Image (cartoon, rainbow, N blue to C red; front, side, top):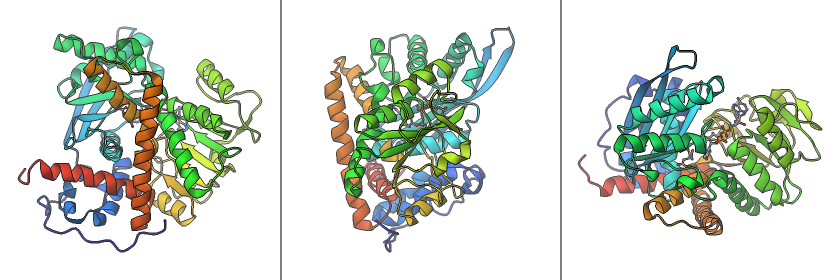
Length: 441
Ligand SMILES: NC(=O)C1=CN([C@@H]2O[C@H](COP(=O)(O)OP(=O)(O)OC[C@H]3O[C@@H](n4cnc5c(N)ncnc54)[C@H](O)[C@@H]3O)[C@@H](O)[C@H]2O)C=CC1
Ligand SMILES: O=C(O)CCC(=O)C(=O)O
């Protein structure tokens, strides 16, 4: 793959053209949402007649901002801002995680919801895209406060979520316990147990085997496929990971099973390095005990900016958006970057990596393993019939490999990046569904 070939223009007038974007959708100052809009602009020329519907992808279908007031343990009342955004529902109900983080904004959640639309279409699960979040640092809350925040938020977004409307799941700083509280709150409010309202639940509440590991497993599966395409031998290859939570730690564990050495890990607390390879199981235990990789015995502590200079074959950003930028993309020494995180690479950095011949496997396919097994969980909840883990992992691998092959072919055919190719596959599916649902909105 190299730079894009001359594209064909979309034909026919867009029914939504002629309206300037509202100021809150202006890409110039919108961080991840601006990145997403640039990615959409890059795919537009490859959509043929379907391109006339593209405006529908440039704004969320529905955005809800909620006030989340809770009583703190010391008796004071605190207010947090929460969001749930449904970007697109042409192919099915909204689907996507919920993030608890002090820096969450509406614009960020809009981008995360939009990337869910693309991801769900790329692996062809019957969902639109949605995402949610609360602007709160959960580390500052007690367990009881965290439960109160979660329950109040769930009640507030209860207006628009539901097993056939929009199905939340875990994301940064949320987990099975948070999903159990969300399921319970929603169920109490509707007067019946509704296991299908969230995925990523505990197994004993209708959760699916394999969901906890699914995103990291997907990263490892896609990494193996990509390595085969570029002739990279995984046995003995080196990986540097940013983020060692659910996605990063499981990716490291499963890549280690394929013979990949984890040489560097960075999280919010520090950066650790060992050229001979870090002990992934011991590092996971250290993080469980201390909350960060910092202080891991036997590893060298690096200044955080040096992470981008680490010599490796594979780099896995698995933390937050906009980590690989124009400021560090020139320094990355990997042969491929596999995006475990959503939106870790800015469009400008994407171009630099592309020009340098570093293969970027975009988030919208690289981390799609999580939502794929969430889909399995949802199907199992509806049928009340549960599959074994081997069945789940096999179906996951089959879906991801098939989707990745199709994307690779599109990338080769149009001589575009894997990101644009994934957007081509996904946007065609979304806009075709939109067209089938009726020409006159
Ligand atoms: N959990 C899931 O199933 C899925 C998660 N993702 C994406 O993967 C990424 C990570 O999510 P999870 O692993 O679930 O979250 P998590 O909460 O389990 O872990 C987040 C990790 O990022 C690190 N981190 C936070 N701020 C950082 C910073 N400034 N610098 C370096 N590291 C930092 C944290 O220390 C932690 O290790 C996010 O972008 C998320 O949207 C994507 C698909 C599914
Ligand atoms: O499992 C899900 O529904 C969504 C996971 C998620 O938030 C993501 O893929 O970014």
